[in-house]
Length: 394
Image 1 (cartoon, one colour):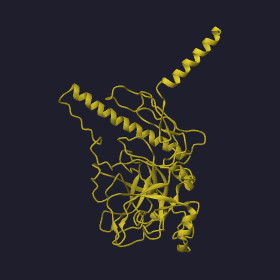
Image 2: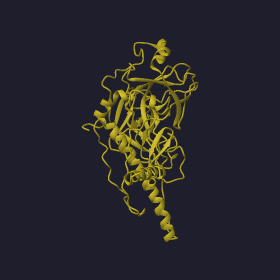
Image 3: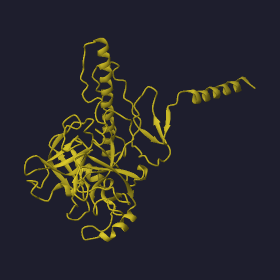
Image 4: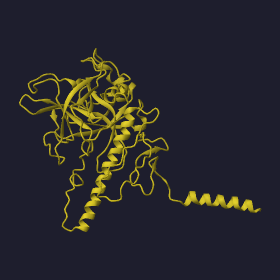
């Protein structure tokens, strides 16, 4: 064997050892490739390796913030990177931004805790109030995009009749029929005035340990093709008078951009403050969450065909069907406008969760009856309209 052959063999051995022995840059978990360096404790995104069965495909790629400061007591304000890319929709760009901002808030909280520890070590009598870090109910921040739409009550205060989803600092997404209520003795005006954000219990506003935000509604934009009492194009946007600040309890959701939901799995979550007991029409002051199944459109049409009428007769492409065919779980009165959602599988943080909004609660035949699933406006079919209103010019 020549000297050149020996050198080539040695090179191959070195390369092989480097690949097999060096610390892995990719860790596998539930068919996802977790792009993560050993020195980076935040899992920024996932790349699909094999088609997942029950987890959504994140439109995310690894992005690492440069080491900004080693001193945890110094301000941490790294510049936000640009997430623009050819072919990327405005709502996808915003999803990147929202998750990046959540990450930065989480890092700030970690730094504040470290700063507190260091200050206590160097100054025994030092005491720093940590505010929202730790000690809160585990459910707080679980659905931080949820908003309760409020009407001015005849007796003062507010009456909440619909739900909504925060999708930007100034907009919530809701149902078209939530833009105006039937005038009754409980309200003084059929047009809603506020969206309450960051609340878990409508009656006890101190449940989260901080006061919720009542965002005043500046204008309501109903889809131009919505024609009540017909049930199609039942979707609307509500703009605030001023932007809200994001936190653990007030965090926007991302919009699901694909028509197909198979990569999300077979289940979704619906949330709302609506009726929880149909016999007495008992309303829940506590935010409720229920797991439902995505129902095939053709099956849904067959099940709901007996309810066909002049206002609705068949599931269209801009609608999606979900529920439990066995009954017992469903959206009901008061849940209208709220989201049909799937949680984004991000790491556990101090800053709550984020979700994809797949549908907007529209209507159902009764509540939680067997073989009568609910109908939701399919968000992916309204992206052009939503983006033109919420992010014009992007």
